[in-house]
Length: 328
Image 1: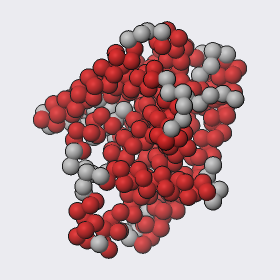
Image 2 (image 1 turned 45 degrees about the horizontal axis):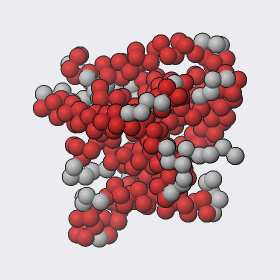
Image 3 (image 1 turned 45 degrees about the vertical axis):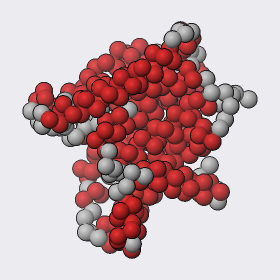
């Protein structure tokens, strides 16, 4: 039986927690969100690392199995949030524009899921697996490595630095998709796996990557502050430092060599994916509860602890659904 990489399981639950910070308000949001932007790139790096194999047939099989599992996840998560959004529209504003042909086109072509804003990741991951699988079958994988810096640069030029370079913002769907996020970070993960022995043989890797995590966390915050003060902080996700932070964070946990499972790694193994999928449902419920208990809940809702509460509630929901065999 293959031993689990408990160190990376711990990183997965950390990344799921960072995603929650992106989607909720906290008093320290301006400091944590620029750092938290590395979470989704980390998820793609993790996937590329563990799916990659030097044997192209094995690599192809891993990709195909991943596509099957992701397609199932894509279907039921989209259906779940479609039901929630349709019911919400029916009982509130009656706006069903998310069912338009244009919304469907964006959904299919650029992973802009009209039912759940966070589900773009699932569609982007599915497309990424399919594209890498196609290039493997054609024996043209090297071309994906060639375009990695081009795609990362496109993410910056059309995204976070669009106001600086072009004086305008572009729709998020042009960069928040399989092209500008999924493929480049997945391929970075495969490169790290390819050179794993060389990376892990470097004795100062842990110190170097820890320094990278600290340095690039600070530079992410600095980029955010400089762009904000210049009134050029576009509403896209990734900064220049986000790529380097994601790589440093992954390599730090990879070198950590946690061989035994613990509470944190167990959460990462079993619940990190479902925390990502379910946490917007928990966020939707909180304002309803705040109306029931206006004073007490309002104070608590905007407190420093709300991301942790959402994390715990998402884990509890995940465990309940697993106990009744709704999820695995």
